[in-house]
Image (cartoon, rainbow, N blue to C red; front, side):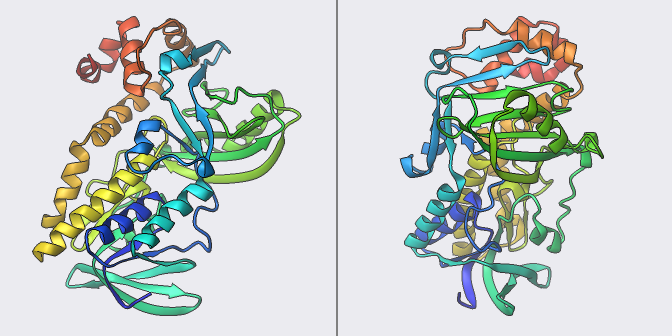
Length: 398
């Protein structure tokens, strides 16, 4: 690790890895600072991503693909099962990754491209001069080094302390933090090619429970519930344990990962003088699904492209870097986040009877291609009353 780079990336997840790789490909020097001793662990993610979304950044590799999904199942609160067949999904649903290997592969590619990587290194304090972020004080094994940079890219996840230290308001309302727990389970009976989502206030209040296969008889079994629904005796783990006891009584848990996922709107602004915020740190997780791998890679790559352009022009002010903020908000990803936030806000307010009604009504839909947007459109089509309940949002989906 040198004392100066063009770009200093805080965090070695998908956003940070794509940012560093893109930066060096643009002719810049870059370094990833990762606080964990090993890239990719612990995994705090259900590990699902769409096939086409993944291929936008990297070719699939069997080494880090645990399972290929060709279908999806939604279980209503009353137990009714809605299956989205592989034919309906067009064999495009996606993959369940092995993030331990996937994240490592992304960082390897960044390193191969020429980026420096410093693990077990913590960005302790930002270096700020005249209101401009100029780098960070990095703590590596007890030794603190000043690492200066033209642009710092904060990719340090949902807990993102670096942005807060730079003066950014990163507060997330309690009700918009999903309290999550995930088990990796083996010895369970599952459809190895279909993800399963369980809905209902008895199962996962203001959230959902998932089963994401990772091969034969093995899956990520997890839950996310609203932070305001969590409390003594009814925490996410309590709901998950009850589900596992009932559904997989003979299964064996080989990993246990607790954590939090933001399902709020993105940060009000994702840039400052000398600073760009990406991925979970920018709160660009899909508010409806909690998915964030694609969004992290997209914003990481865009952040480095913006940094390269601004550094080349000799202007890394907030005003110059705002092109990043405006670009991702206007993108397909940005529009989906805003749309899905409103859908999420609508759904979490519905009683189980309403959720049952919606899922029953769309159980026989025939979509040529399964996407979240197409599913929502079909739900509205067969439930005309939702046009009034969703208001302007529903009209925009027509």
